[in-house]
Image (cartoon, rainbow, N blue to C red):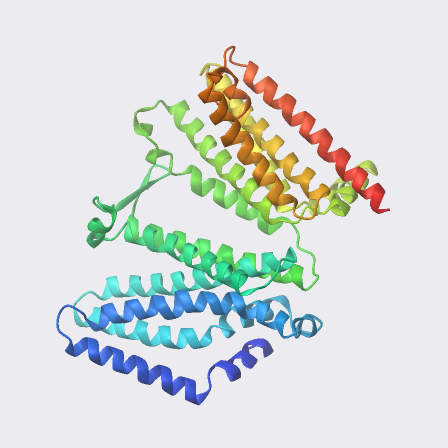
Length: 448
């Protein structure tokens, strides 16, 4: 049954005049493409218009769905209504873009008929699923970006709406290039032969079915992210189970691509396990950086964490952990497992030392984000500038003046002796953590 928000958008978007305009315009376009000759077919016209209407225009409408309510000062009334998070998410995502999907459905029908008429029914069906997925990814990513910005209380100018739209377009581009990588006719686009199979966890799988299932799974996770952010916006609490499930999924998914690394097939068995652990740890580390940047660093919440741990209510603290904290813990666990595996297989000291140093840098960088968030209002920008200085500017200066021996102190690289770099990095990390925690406590005392 349609929710009230979705029904309201249907009334607003699908007026008879707009429907007639969309149908008439697309009919003229397809008729022009049919009589223009072999250089431009109805299929290519439908494909181009689908990207324009559903992906580009639809991403803007999705990013504007809540921002428009805030501008019109109606969002607070909707938040106080009895509409649930699921109905609100569905209504905003598909209701605000229902006019785009009307045009997209017509384009999909033309492409499907064209595919069946030219003797490629299976390819037409796979393409149909792909086009639906790329449209959903673009629109859901734009909506998710707007929800994250609203939670951070960012501005909502036209530039911000364009940025939300850009997030959706970039996500759609990623889906497009992944799908084209399995298209036999896309060799010219990539400058090399497309792949027909995917080696994942030592299993040989057809490229198109594998990519289609993967894209569907990631679309589901994006939709789950929209739902969770909508729950937060409606002042509902989210447990950690969904993010924990995503961490398990992304770790297993990324670890299966070890065969795609250079010379992975020629390595010994213990190296294969190490590569899979390294891929999972890298994915978790990237998620930690992304989430510590996106999530608000609330010093009141961190003080609550400390009070819960101090009183022995560790379970309550764990149940309320932010996503970046859970991602960091997952990175540390997998990194420690990698270090243990390398040590047990007598792989030498260089790889364990590099892993220890990488975890130390991640700890230091997270502490820098927390420190600046507790210091100033726009702390994330200051943290990013600081990290650029630590990872790019200072190493470039040292490299220019012949100070390469100090480079292990600024990013993971071999040092002599091998454990000197990790020891110094963890010294930096401990200092950064102590300073960040002290700053959070001091900020809370001043606020009190």
